Length: 248
Ligand code: NAP
Image (tube, rainbow, N blue to C red):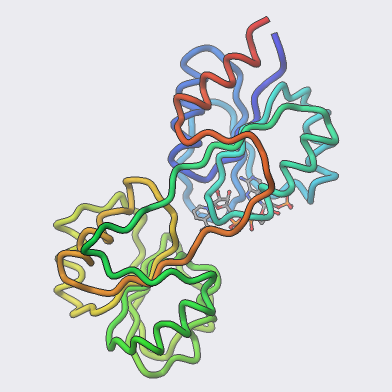
């Protein structure tokens, strides 16, 4: 039997994987960055906080005798994934990436793909809506801070840090969201554009259906590039990979 499995988490998939492996008697240590004030905790052991870079993570993997690593962090969490690639190679520990598929536009969607939040702010200025639902998380909102031409409804899990746009309201919420709830939010606040990241997954997808039904433009930030690493899209496939590395 190999050592414990490290799951780099902060996503619903990471929690689901920890739950499945823990239920099968596999020792799992989930790692969270510690960004959210009251995180949903997975089954099994949990550690919280950064490792201190790839070198320190490699040392941590060796120190805990980790048998395999699953990087199940969010598609937009770049640094920890790069760190996992380097550290697992240095410590000679197998690594799998668990990443949910991105969203795809249908024929009735009015999506505008951009590379990052500054580009999203630029495209917003071109489209010039008056009232924007901004659901890109609380990091990087300074990209919109100088935009005095519109009102922003900023939805995130924990309060965002300034600078923020002058005209805004913050809603603290973490989903999952329903189509009916998203339609009500759009209607109540007279939203006429949505800005989101391509996070993927069903838990936060309802806003895209609501935007389609209301005919709203959606500015959607493309996922950042990632280092090449073995990757699966589902929790079941990740669990099967882990089982393959723990038997024998
Ligand atoms: P990031 O830019 O890749 O990470 C920055 C630093 O935070 C990393 O270098 C690492 O510090 C630490 N870190 C990140 N994830 C960690 C983890 N799971 N366990 C231990 N340390 C971790 O990540 P981020 O975009 O700030 O996201 C932070 C966390 O929030 C991730 O775990 C991610 O799954 C979750 N999340 C992110 C988003 C998003 O849109 N970015 C959305 C939902 C959830 P050291 O270098 O010191 O090890």
